[in-house]
Length: 355
Ligand SMILES: NC(=O)C1=CN([C@@H]2O[C@H](COP(=O)(O)OP(=O)(O)OC[C@H]3O[C@@H](n4cnc5c(N)ncnc54)[C@H](O)[C@@H]3O)[C@@H](O)[C@H]2O)C=CC1
Ligand SMILES: O=C(O)CCC(=O)C(=O)O
Image: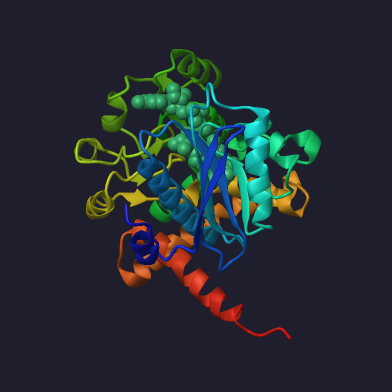
């Protein structure tokens, strides 16, 4: 991979390669854009096959965070770390503390958090070396598991979609097909059930399915059946890339709105569902509740305030729809435009010399 070519193409600011022999730390911090504020994004620990794969992931993910933060209305830029290693066998206190010292050396340009392969305990070790980490334990002033907040944001996004399609936030009697009833999916089902929706669910974890059937009266279906069920809303909360050439012909829904990351297999699938008349809530706008929640820690965590900000995902989704109509483009492109416009305008505002 030609790093500078890639950085130039997508306008990256910085890539930091961190190594510590004692702990075996191999980490790559990607800082994409800090126009709006310090770059915030989680640390992913993964056993990448190659060095190149790890660098590519750090870059791709950090750029995604720029868009997520900008679209959420946060004063934050985009960053992400990948730690190259097996999260099951290669974690240690010294590894996280070595990493924490690298984060500290950036003096607040980058703030880390948890991601795939990392948990609150890892963040607590990092906190011993730097204040530039969020998603730490509640006893350290942190906000704990972000999943319920992510689910609340997805629920608010679904209400915005309902309003767009049926002219009302009320989802009483609407049928929602929920794929994945893990952390986010479970809490989402709870919100939907309380709001009077009917649930059809699937998950590879039978116990997780049984729980939502028992608690929320959901109907369980097979893993591949979920795409073709008669429903009003399809809500992906498990895997990425479930909007693809195989699934699109099966969809009977009017709305796609869920918490999973990277839902469109390819961008063109966003065009195809728009042509089919399906309203799509762009993933990084609707699933920003976790980010909004951890970002609140920077002000001294206040759960009520965090929930109020998460609730605004309703307005963010509505704004995406307005831009899509204004510019006659699919919603996934409108989301990018909304984020880019905010960065550009505020970037210019922040150019003013303050003396
Ligand atoms: N937890 C959070 O706050 C956030 C999560 N996300 C995204 O939301 C999605 C769900 O995240 P979590 O709930 O935290 O993860 P999780 O691991 O708790 O839940 C995912 C669920 O999907 C199920 N699953 C896996 N493969 C499946 C398949 N082929 N068909 C049906 N179900 C399948 C798993 O068994 C599991 O129950 C992920 O894409 C994640 O990246 C995005 C933003 C924040
Ligand atoms: O929710 C978190 O813990 C950090 C935010 C983040 O990295 C993400 O939303 O992907």
